Length: 596
Image (cartoon, rainbow, N blue to C red; front, side, top):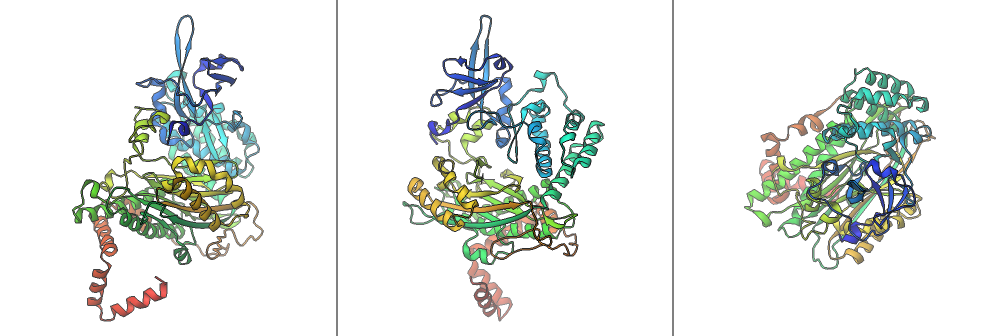
């Protein structure tokens, strides 16, 4: 990524109270045009802003919270305001909650009265999800100043980070937040107003823990989401690029795999074999296969569970899946004596559309949660006709430098080693791998795009998404056609690399014309949950108990066994034949039946 590509944002937030005194229309430092309190238009966006290193105290929080870019602004640079007595360094922020004309997006309070019950609960849940990170960085005051909270569709965003010490709030509590949230009750949706009031009063009386608040809001969210009718479609493809004889990318599902997918197309995976490492192609294929198997098991376990499993538990289970796949590839590297650059490795990004069974007054519905897990620089985007949101943060040196407060984003991406990966599957032991797992709710029409860097390089997604979003969601362009078109575009623009993508199209309707059918999927068969469906039995086995114990030796041995089966299929077949004289014939019958 070049400096020009990294500095396309023109609207800047001046994160200092003194900036509110600058009237609209004034030009600051012969560069920044004040258009509203604290919102400045950068008239020279191709020129770098001023830098300060080491970062001043008030800017450190932006580095520590860099991973939360979906909700938080990003430190862009500084501007020096000089007066007769002093010079004030004003932090300048990009990735701020403004529209294309630089107008602030609606505040939580402004949007509250016209929001659905699901939107209201989801916004509050996101605020609670940010509570611990903000507390750890000493900026909890950011979440209790209501005008600082803005909404961008389903997403809650903050204008700036506000130090607790700067406001005198050395201890911001849930009771404080409960008092503020009580003021929103007059506009609360009737379906959830009573539950919110009870929760806010409990918070105000300091009788609720963070876990209690999270659990109650999550319960409300899932019950409301279960009333939605959601249609999903999925399609994927890959292209080796113009300079490659083989393709180190792998993806799931292929058309053949989709036809036999027991989840009906609710799992998508992209793996990109690490360039320059021997065996990257094998590693990506192996990772996709293992992730697919484990994700399908988790998917089924969650359907069969008779209670709500928390986002934290599901995220832990997915993280454990990623680590056991990493350990399997690592074990193969060790067994073959592969060291350093000879080690095979792969990036990964995976999406699981979780269908927990949620009972409400309308019957049994699905939770419609989406969990994204990633390691490396393969990416996930959420795209609507209005916006394109990058959901993941690359695991590379540029990101590492920003997180550690040693550099700013636009400057860091121009390092010679900026895109070198800091982690990939198979390159280190499982306890050292830190997969990022996050949840968001499918409450609006949109497209989930997973891709390798062959598509995302040079900001190609950001510059082309508008050509696809509306046409896909209005069914003017079939999903398979969109995949091929995007592959062709990337082949022309980024064709020196392998290219892979999977698209998951989501269409949401709040009306249930058939009350017996609360969920439908368009690939490859319709999946219906009826109100007369039997009560699922509690079966919290592999998903939670096993996956949370994968650091044990049994989990490691299981991973090695899978690796042997993947890399030595002939040996496994011979072993099975020795155990059973009819083993070979049975194997051939199975392969013919499944179409493999």
